[in-house]
Amino acid sequence: QILILDFGSQYTQLIARRVRELNVYCEIQPFYDAPELTPDIKGIILSGSPCSVRDAECPQVDLSKYRGKVPILGVCYGAQYMAFKNGGHVLPSEIREYGRAKLSSIDSKNALLKNITIGSQVWMSHGDTIKSLPEKFKIIASTPTVEVAAFQIEDEPTYGIQFHPEVTHSLEGKQLLENFLVEICHCAQDWTPDVFADVTIAELKEQLGNDKVVLGLSGGVDSSVAAMLIHHAIGTNLYCIFVDNGLLRKNEYEEVLASYKNMGLNVKGVDAKQQFYSALAGLSDPEEKRKAIGRTFIEIFDQEAKTIQNVKWLAQGTIYPDIIESVSVKGPSATIKSHHNVGGLPAKMNLKVVEPLKTLFKDGVRLVGKALEIDQKILGRHPFPGPGLAIRILGDVTPEKVRVIQEVDYIFINHLKITGLYDGVWQAGAILLPVQSVGVMGDERTYESVVALRAVASVDGMTADWVHLPYDFLSDVSNEIINKVKGVNRVVYDISSKPPATIEWE
Ligand code: XMP
Image 1 (spheres, protein in one colour):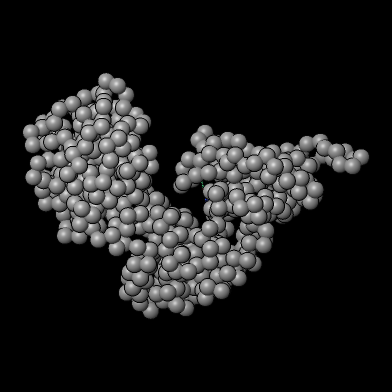
Image 2: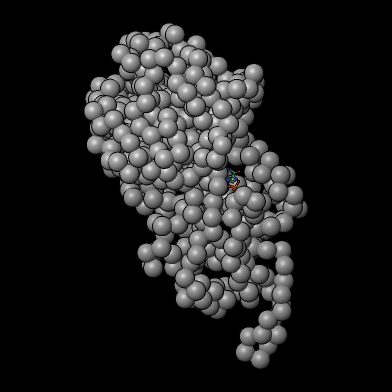
């Protein structure tokens, strides 16, 4: 594996994803928790950082335990850190070095730069720059304004680059990373979704033995893939529970339950609509609504799990970004969070937790799902929040409002599917506003609800932009909604990005 030491850069996770895309397994560790060198570590990447190496409190790591023993690639701060620590000069850049630059000279015999072309576009993003290198550090690439764009330490597989190969704006960045992984670290590029699935299933068999496991399915990608991995390992000892909270999309409960049964899962559907509606009655504060839904889910799941004799484990679809958070540059205090999809559940139930996806990113989860031949309908689904339509009905939730927003959502999503736009949109849905407006239908005055449509493009939900859906498309969807859904006479489209807005309205 490749070890990525994180100094807090916004791009650290992106480095990890690129390495995984090259079929090499890697893990991120915060700089203050740098592990000892073990034989399975084939190379080390030092990330960037929002800090400057000139700050007294900048992130530090003792590299002597790695240097010369295993290849090292410092990216941006990582490169500056090595130069600075060995007596080089790192100063604030005279010209702000952000954005595109072109490599104007390259040592093409250097293994790191194999097949990288002169004039290759790279992405710079740094306030500091290496002004002079220590002895034994030699320049291997430059741009017109950054002389030390890349360096190597003589007779050592230690490299530094001041640009970011992990972002797509560095057009040959992936080639450079592949050079590091394959030519320099001699990684085998054999970490594929199939291998991950086989290895994980074997490990789960070992870990779980004949124990019984309970898992809450949500209809989403993560819990479905986690369930299938465990199902392959222990078969009918996996007990899945799929709760109808009355806040799902139209027909979703029946359809998803049917596909789970087709996949051979041992799944119990629980109709708990009334419990959720009772728990939500009269609540209009978003946080109170979320808490009521979370509490009710735990009660129901706990009740159902208790009917399974001798269950020992709770399985969850936790993924890598839930576990690692960007390193706080202030130190270890505010760093790694332990996230659970259903907060509080493991503690209450006194079960051991198994999380087979906890080393994967979302795109990796989808690829493993594909390797396991899970239905594309489940793998390609847009994310849908745990509290469901309750956080898309602003104000209090009633069964009638759920019906209205289910119909609206159904028309919107269906149009996205039939026009081929669905897969290009990261997430979409409809929101019922607590607003009535005047309209006219035939000769009659109407006074009915307003709904908003939202469609966003995103990579991980942390930031998002609204999708520029075609006007004709919006016009068709709006007409159908107003004509077919009783109680709605006006449709608006949300054109806010995140930040400053969020994806959900509550
Ligand atoms: P926001 O609204 O924070 O949403 O921009 C980002 C992503 O998270 C989803 N989301 C949730 N998912 N429980 C969930 O499981 C929640 O309480 C929750 N709130 C938001 C949202 O749908 C989007 O994909």
